[in-house]
Length: 394
Ligand SMILES: Cc1ncc(COP(=O)(O)O)c(C=O)c1O
Image (cartoon, rainbow, N blue to C red; front, side, top):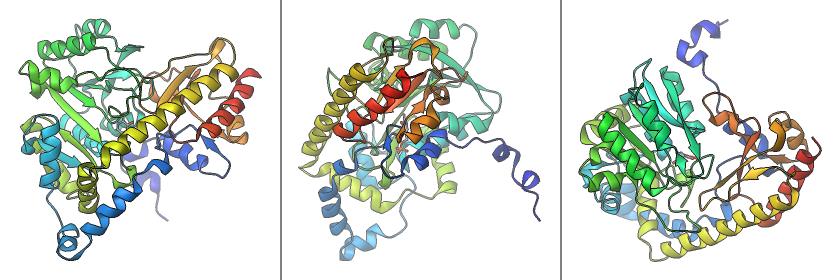
């Protein structure tokens, strides 16, 4: 008999499974209306574009290139294309197996046990999951409807010397907020003054339904000649298909070199087929129409959820209508414990996640994150009505 308590490494023993990935397993039951995951609408995958692209890539000579081992940095033509989109040279672009791999590798190359990093509170639980095993200290930055509070950050920086600050400036996960322009500028200035790196994670920026796009932290830093203060992470999971597992990052060369070295030891390189499909899809003349369709569909679903919540949720519930992305975050009245209602919700065949999974201090049990992209407007109305009845009966 193997004693697994002794056999698993100390880091692994203490690990918690991702709550959301566990909930997703429960949420695939038939009839379940799931607002839990960060899932795109499957009927919106650009199937025709992907089919055309893959057929060409698996033909004759092309197939021999597509199916061979590739470069660890990623497919050069894709890197060049992406680099151009953010005004950096090809050498500064690294393709990753989803943005999640970028977060994991960054943590591993940058962080030593006991060091502190600054995170929005609440923040993306996949980042917490990637960095928690490294034994780092998360320093929470308060958030409001305009993103992370830079005044509070300035105060925190009088006592903390963080290795980096992690932020999602566009349609934050879980809160949906957009970091205001003056705060973006203030953040870049603080990063230079205090000498820390900004990790800018932007998988949702292309999913804007209202309002004007704001400049990225990377572009603001580049304009001030301090582009090396920003690592910028992107993903095709939310706009093309997450199953292809293609994300990318750009950052200062010494950092990218370290990430590349680790990546060579991790998975050699991301799937070449996935990368080459993405390159074909984003260069296809039909791609802009796909993005347009995605925005129209998701914007309508956001509106359907917002309207259904106005009708069904108990008096005193508060939420904001995000300008884009995939999530709406709602705070239930009178400190109601949404974690305690969760099992009943599953019995009623509707799933959500509570925000305590996304916070540093386990606060947020009265707050839920609702995904509005995966279910149809009819399902959204039905699921929100079920939740409304449940929360109103508490
Ligand atoms: C903020 C954020 N970053 C990164 C990821 C990881 O995405 P992927 O690895 O699919 O590119 C997600 C996925 O939900 C996310 O919400």
